[in-house]
Image (cartoon, rainbow, N blue to C red; front, side, top):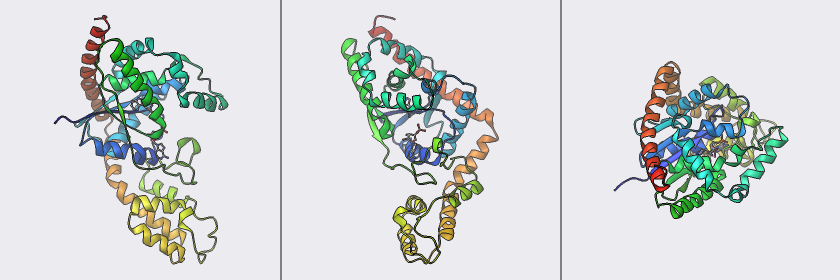
Length: 329
Ligand code: AMP
Ligand code: TRP
């Protein structure tokens, strides 16, 4: 029985954090044993909303590759590559753009939202490229004939559009492409140290690259139950960010931790220490892998070159079929 094929991507926008790991990468690492996987660092996508200063792109790609590899993605099992290294993405994007009605793009709910949101921050993304973002994403997916797409909930409207575009292509020319379906990661939104959604734009994140010492100091800054002022006050774990993390990292034992908080038999300082110890322990293996990769940038480069070669083979063969189907061969 042949496995399904996965493609997913992430923009190299800097500072990969624990929310990105738990919300996406951890799932990818599990999927790599069940599917044939393509994982792409989508640098062209990063330009759709940030095209002015491109100087940091190379270092961000390098950092993202280290994040993924240290999280446990295996470059032999998966094809790990940079989008712009495989020019076929651009060709397919162009062809798809010819058959995509403008109205489909304008009604993507994230389009107007983000346009407005970034406009407020003084960013002008009233561009052709930004409107076409889901077309580029569709090209990424169908170039590899991927049928299963691990994404967060925010990407569902884009995937819906991808399916519509696949149906349109298959009807107009030849039925070449499978309709991609989402694979939603089960974990919920991870809060940052201030209790809001962990996000690099809030400055409340725990960098995935944090050393054990940095991890401990971020945990010490986490907000706890604001009503619990004195050590002897009973706490409410349900409103405590530290407890949210205990549930993730300490599983069953978090029940006993919640009890101790409610009875004030454990103080916040010790509770945080217990969490930090567990996190440092659980992330230790990844940290060791990171240090090895950081010491060997040539190896990271090699892995991306190798990934691009493998991706290009599949992409070139799909493009042959596409050109045939469209009488452009
Ligand atoms: P972003 O960097 O926001 O584009 O997110 C990249 C991936 O990480 C997406 O799949 C998001 O759903 C996921 N992600 C980002 N922030 C969080 C968070 N705080 N909790 C869980 N998942 C997250
Ligand atoms: N749009 C996705 C995001 O911002 C990244 C992405 C680009 C992607 N191409 C993709 C995700 C293809 C899944 C499949 O998170």
